Amino acid sequence: MAQITREEVPAELTWDLGAIFADDQAYQEAFADLEAKLPTLDQYVGHLGDSAQTLQAGLEADLAIERAFEKLYVYAHQKFDQDTSNSTYAGMNAQVQDLLAKVSQATAFFQPEVLAVDQETLKGYLQEPGLKPYQHFFDVLLAEKAHTLPADQEALLAGASTVMSSAEQTFSVLDNADIDFGDVMDEDGNVQELTNGLYAMMLRSKNPQTRREAFETLYDAYMSLKNTFASTLSATVKKHNFLAKTRHYNSAKEAAVLSNQIPTAVYDTLTDRVNKNLPLLHRYVALRKHVLGLSELHSSDLYVALVDEVDLPVTYADAQKIALKALAPLGEDYLAVVQKAFDERWIDVVENKGKRSGAYSGGAYDTNPYILLNWQDTLDNVYTLVHEMGHTVHSYLTRHNQPYHYGDYPIFLAEIASTTNESLLTDYLLKAYPDDQQVQAYVLNQYLDGFKGTVFRQTQFAEFEAWIHDQDAAGQPLTAEVMADYYGDLNAKYYGPDLETDQEIAYEWTRIPHFYYNFYVYQYSTGEAAATTLAQNILTKGEADRYKDYLKAGNSASPLDVIKKAGVNMAEGEYLDQAFAVFEDRLNQLEALLGQSK
Image (cartoon, rainbow, N blue to C red; front, side):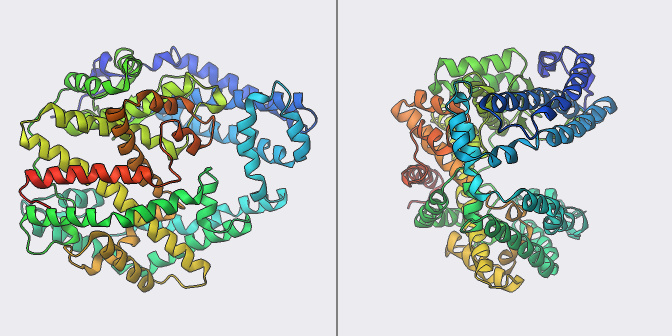
């Protein structure tokens, strides 16, 4: 059946972007108005240090430009996403991208000029009433001062950024365009060209041979280019280490995490606690081998579901009711925001021709926090809805409790809100179907697989990432063989004795784009673990109000201080221990349901 067009989607299932601008003409008028205002920032260039009043005026003019731009960006971007085949909105999206470059250029003077102001002079300015509300904003800015180079050196590094990014660009082209995986036979006996999307589907096949063929075919392609991928990854690591040293950090890891106001203790505590709890992952791997009935469990067998998807069709109307019930422990004020999202058309629900795939929560300070879905009547889509609703309510509460300059939140905290909602949904479903073993087993399997893939797997990546940077900093060459030897041993340590040693998995690092993201992946692990702990605290200790204090805080304090409002100290390991206790309890339940005791 052909997809419906955008015009055929019922209005009540679309987001209301008219709440941003009444129509495209209003958007174009606001666009032209902002473009005309950009030159007004020139009056502050070279003068921010003249007085507290000039600094305040320059800051507020800068923020006003950025705030107006964000509203334009959301309107154009989401108009485009709802139908990427619409040439009008494709043009508007391109237009707003061009405006982004102009805004960035017009505001680029602010940070280096503030950092150039004498520190004692600046401290004096910040005592003035008009600047006191911006104290934390400037604290964050000034924390970078020790790692900011003289202007001519900063300009030199900025000019070299394209050259220094060439290795990851080469990886991206190889990985997304040039690599040829060859053909495979699917479980229906059809020969198909292997792609990353098809690979993911085939790893979920019930046929072990189908999974194995896809795995070997894919890795044959990556291994044939192992030296090239070693070269691109090594060059990227060298770039990270070079920039960290140049900016006077002790390591690339320190440079990456401290720039986000996160101490390295968070990273190190994560890897330490995960290593101590690897026996739990080994138990789950052993359960997988038992349930699948395999004499040998291979890396290609780690992603197939242990339990068939439940026959539990869920309409979008059903999902709204489930979401409200699952999120009820967060309180009536939280549910009121969820209901506003449903009633005021913050959500673009169904798939239509040309619509962007996937799901996200977006928006800006002066817009609703919109959600894009491509709804299907499945339980997985209910999880998607509550996940994105977590982001949306986080954004709403932040923006309604913080001024614009604190009205956002860092990536380190973002996924906690969405994953906490997923954990609450898991708890709700387990309690809602106490006598349905199929539903119980399916939900438990989904939870354990998610925890395995996020907390354990992403920490494995984080451990490898730290090692390759340390090796390079010590002058050790990062050849394909060196990295494969370490990665193979690391993988064996994580998954334990019930997983066979496949030579291909030692080269998994060749295909992971996140290794080019500069110490990014650990945040997936910390976020999932914190969310698991927070959900349990909400359910067992009634700590919903503390949790909502975190949702309201935005960027008004450091990320660790913000999450402490919810009752989690992420510089210490207790939150991880609590999360592993939940994992173990649910593993016990699944083992009992599937006939294998500890």
